[in-house]
Length: 340
Image 1: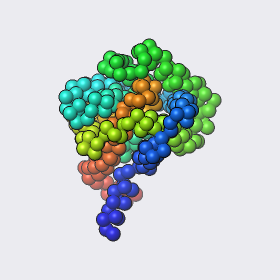
Image 2 (image 1 turned 120 degrees about the horizontal axis):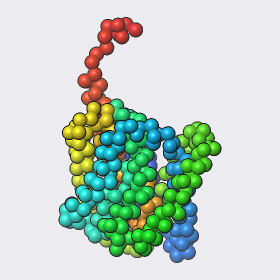
Image 3 (image 1 turned 135 degrees about the horizontal axis):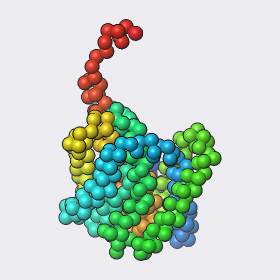
Image 4 (image 1 turned 90 degrees about the vertical axis):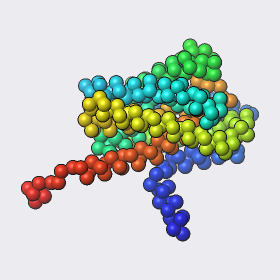
């Protein structure tokens, strides 16, 4: 019984409900994939779901949050460089190792995740938990999410042009219609609905995650019907986890050392660590669905799903450890403060 209690305690502490929902969604796509006319209907619906997802992003993102932290431009430059330069260089530079640990299609997924923007919610949450500069985290993560709509397809076209769906111009057009336009409409709607959005952030967050689950189901249904699982052995799956862990470890070490080497104070170092080492599943899944051919999309998304869980587990541990270390290092309260 103690073993089961230990497993449950680990799950409760480190595994979020969304991760479990992702696993169950993939299992459903394997057991009962959409195919034929059903897949065509679901595929059309997924385009509408992607548009609604980015409309909600536009509703949620406050322009004030973007402008509030812009004075700390050095920090934001480091985060953007880590997200859109360091990660892509890792993906390209480690190609022999990553190919050895995966397969050609899965390597495309590893490379694609390196091109994605940072997360918003978890970057801010971990920065706050560790005692970092939360205002700067909000600005950096939000700016990264917005820049990714443009920078990610440019990287994909430069590095994976032959593997992406259609021409670069077609990819930009599709992204503009399904991501940029809905996002802009969401920003316009925010002018009237800002207070409504703030009162319903949890509901909108739930809608975001539900949208991603639907897109994952459609993508992995296609993967199931095209034989993805027949090519993915247990050893390859385990080596894919190692590949994701390798990328994450190098990113975490580099961002941690960069913050110190560039002379940032500790709160800013924490922000650089947690905002510069993340990749967004919420943005990556719909982008993969738009940029890549349907038969490739599931192979592209799988490494991102593994990386998503790896970054949550690792950063949750690091945030708790940093918070505890800062708490121990803090000077004890003075007698006057204690008496009050």
